[in-house]
Image (cartoon, rainbow, N blue to C red; front, top):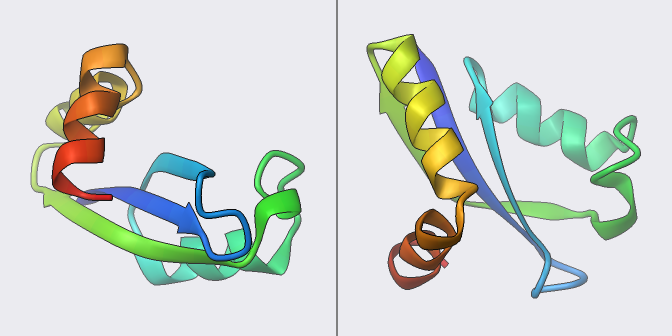
Length: 80
């Protein structure tokens, strides 16, 4: 099962991140630990939403949609 997760920086609230993982808690801990150069400068991160998908292809497609302009607007209205 895959999860699309939406994060918001606690230190920089305008910074948001959308990702895909099979273990949300472990992934959030990894973002906050800081090994990723993309996310380390805005930590700590907080989880705003996590959506579970039984179909991996649908999860990947939904993550890709959320990273488009209209998907970003959808996420802003409904999750952040």
